[in-house]
Image (tube, rainbow, N blue to C red; front, side, top):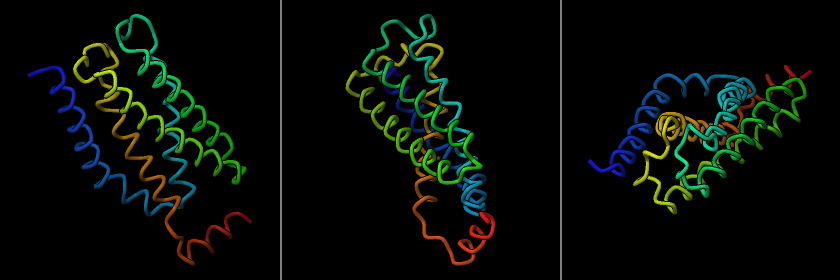
Length: 173
């Protein structure tokens, strides 16, 4: 099997496995949670995205990993991780928290979409071995990141029931 086909199969199966897990274990819990707590849980996951800087760490990835992919992915993940950490640090200042939640989700989702674009432009699936020790990141970690961005946007945009709005008003006072 070619490296390209292996990489693409791994990527698709990574999404399938995470979607199955998410649907059964994570999504029902997130939907039932207070919106603030649900977003805080997802921000916690994304706060580890500083790890994406590993794409530019010599000795971990191949020096032939295209810079057009590696540099953008590294700094996009780093920015998303910092924004998620800022959301967590500002949890007691709700307007600021919500601003950082929106920011880290917009930056993070855009980063992942553009990473896919850069990977395709540089024919990275055919050169997947150049990921070296970071191969698991796009296969295992990226799918759950993208899925949680979609979930976060859904939860941010869904209408709140009257009971939930009353509960949130009560909790803020």
